Image (cartoon, rainbow, N blue to C red):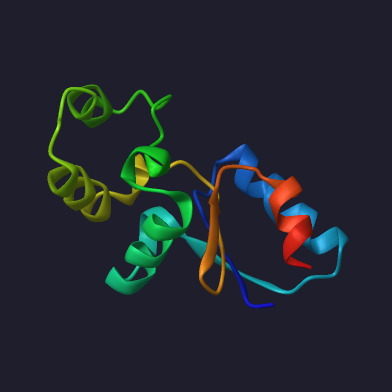
Length: 113
């Protein structure tokens, strides 16, 4: 397994995900999503794995761009906005090759083992 955890430094769910993998002695690479973001290929892979941009966006966020995005119909424009501002993503984003999840999803990660 090649686990990458993209998260925000103050995100409780990101810390829970890291703890979940540590407890099972599964090595992972932690990446600060806000500081480093994702490459274009990583972003496209995650979008395909989670089922589209609407599942990747953190709709609970208080960020002003989220309010605007609720009224946007253009999928490409949403993808560009989220790619340029990774703070809008629901975290943690956990990747294992071509598989990926958004949020805390131990029931899915167990199947990866």
